Image (cartoon, rainbow, N blue to C red; front, top):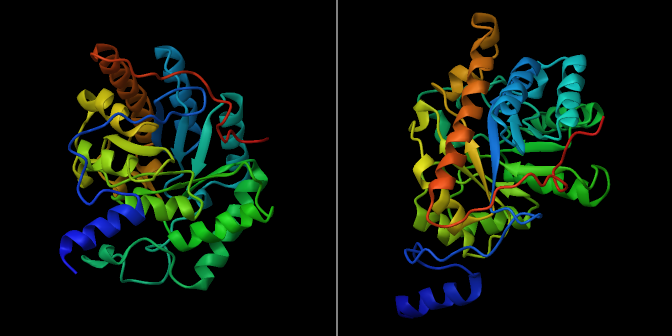
Length: 316
């Protein structure tokens, strides 16, 4: 078989292109309510951070749709704090997605924290980890949380089955993290099949790469880094906001500036500098405003609206 025949078979049977889409076709998909893009603020780690984010959004008249929170693990909030976190989200119509608990690096395993151990991935290690992960999911659900950040495709399949079986409420949302490391339509199709409601592709995806995902049979929203931590590249993509939404809609504009994941999400950062997370929360809302201002300057229209009926707002 010639490679052309091989490639034609893939294209005809797997619903994605063999090359990135340099032609950059418009995406015809939108969120419910018609928006092509929404705002996602990441790295909100405690109740104070969330309250400051809400105040700043009110001050700047910015609609925040989704909050990626407790990246270092919901485990680090006590029961009362977790309930209050959910209450703030519910009062302000915010989709709150939490990381139930940190996985590798927290347990007794040492491979992940070695210099090259990160290449082995952030998936769960051992079945005790599954047990504790599901215990934390249950605690979050009891507190009213209805959205979760997922880094392990195996757990995504389990969580989706629990949702389909009615063990987990049907309105619970799963977002697959950038830490799962997907950057193609092939990966996006897999996550969609296993129950992902959105996914965060690799942070450094070009417009043709994003277009190849959207045109490759992936219908769920893409969460696109617009501002990335220094340790992972530190880029800002504000000028590309309109083009990103045009080719990849529906997209969440993901905003997560900072020094590094390790510094922002360690267990003692709040004790060292209590204002650190609050200051970052306010800066992230400012960046959302900058993104929206660049949309206003675009030569074509991109819709961002206040529609929130489909969001997994906490139930308290």
